[in-house]
Length: 269
Length: 95
Image (cartoon, rainbow over all chains, first blue to last red; front, side, top):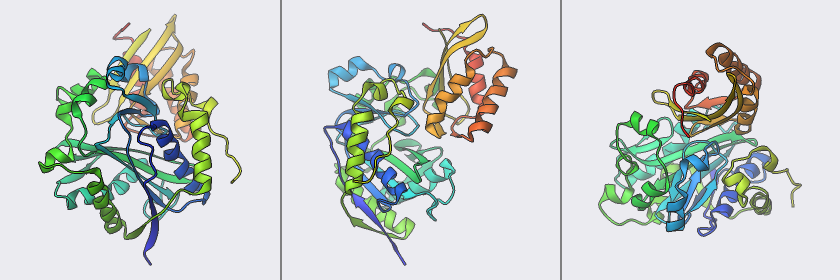
């Protein structure tokens, strides 16, 4: 029988901190059995999203952030900094740990498997996308999407952002790119290493068209049926608590202090 | 402050910033775009490295002990990359 997954588009485009709180609340609830397997699509306005191990001080050009009105938020997964704007589509997949699609806890396997739906979705649009280990989707060697993920709280979690029609000029300004990283990839700037769906298709395209195509890609790749749904009460209360205790705080976003802010598990509301 | 940015072939970037006192690590901050599960285990590794001499043999023992003890899973960096990154702080200095 075809498994049914929930697809939610709960988003706070002008509140990247709440967006990130929801991003963590969903896999926690899925791991508790309080929510079904879920795909989420969402957007941020100008925001740098740091990987959980990154130094804001080293990675972020704060002057450029101030000039461009760019916020800085830290996610709970590893990987590198990404720049989000309205032309950037974020997707997240939360499954219970042990789900037959990714039964193990090997993170490389999680990325490989859970990128497939997006790769298929992009191909349906006519983009020759392919998964590129460790965690990218690329088109002719240029990165169009990066993913991150974790196995925790009883869940398998994978999220990625897809450059649909993003402003790559701002991206290149707000993030400092370390020399060691460029040396390895043999190119001189962020803009040259990345591309957008718009540039690949040579036409204007909305993120909605891309997410619709990814829904198809996910259904085809994993033989599941996606059904529109909302967040549960448990997810909303978790999100509010995570917002208060973690994602609205500089100690987490800028300093990346792990332990003191780890959310306590509240009783179901 | 001693600093090194290290990237193994095909791997992720590890950025080490540490203060040293007579050849021993006083404080160390490991940052970068790698993956490590559980994420909360990284401060444990930093703590384990405090007071360690910046020498390959001792560092390797500690890093291996961390991975064995925590059963942490890394992606994009190996224990060897971590050791090399820390050793590299002796080669370059930044403000």
